[in-house]
Length: 292
Image 1 (tube, rainbow, N blue to C red):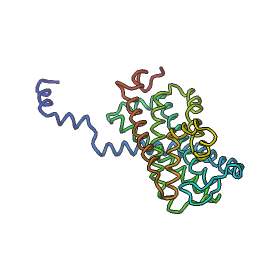
Image 2: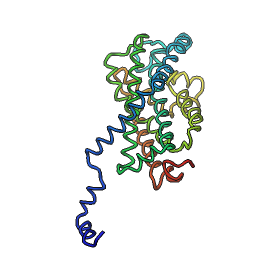
Image 3: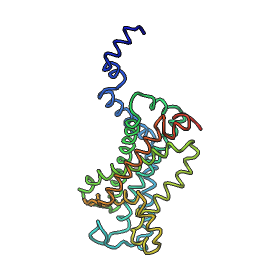
Image 4: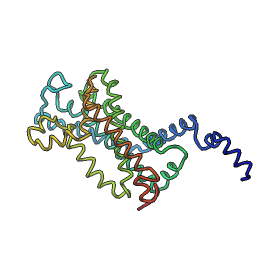
């Protein structure tokens, strides 16, 4: 590079910035590409779609029906009358769909990092926060599709929330999906190998699901174990389930809303930091493609 070229570049810093910084159109193309990649991956893996539905449907058709008489539910908000156990457990099963979908997204992140696809994505000129957020939104879109298919099947099992509830629950699904997906993104920076995913599922997914209000009301847990009640009350998944439960009936649980938003910001911030090439956990292991 000649002296005149260097001087011209220094005198016109906007030229260098325009070359190194993608424009709005490039951001939109990148966002669409990442989200569409997640959707296509889901559509091409039919067994993933079936497993995402079979799991909650087994709980709804078999478990809930078998425990209908044992686990009766009294009148508690947002319900205005006694409800069948199947009705009570449905929001928890919706949360289960989003929880397992988030963990599947975490698994795909680990796989992409091992095969080098994630390295290619993360070395692009786009900010890593934007790339991670785009992948997160793609995962949330997939989970919402699964949820509405499940609710459509559950409708024929006499799970009939108000028709408006199918619309009012959408913002709750987005927020809960973002929270669980952000947690999964952070976990993908901690999981080093695919073989470790099964252990993560056992020690993260199942405690989060069972130590929550997904399957039984909190007042029943408090009667049997005050310690377990406190654990359930502090579980972010509990508040995701309650946010969905109230939204299905056109109501808002403000406490759960605040906790879900706060946890989303915390988990997403931790994920962005973990994928930071100079400070995060990925950097300490030698980059996104490292096997350490």
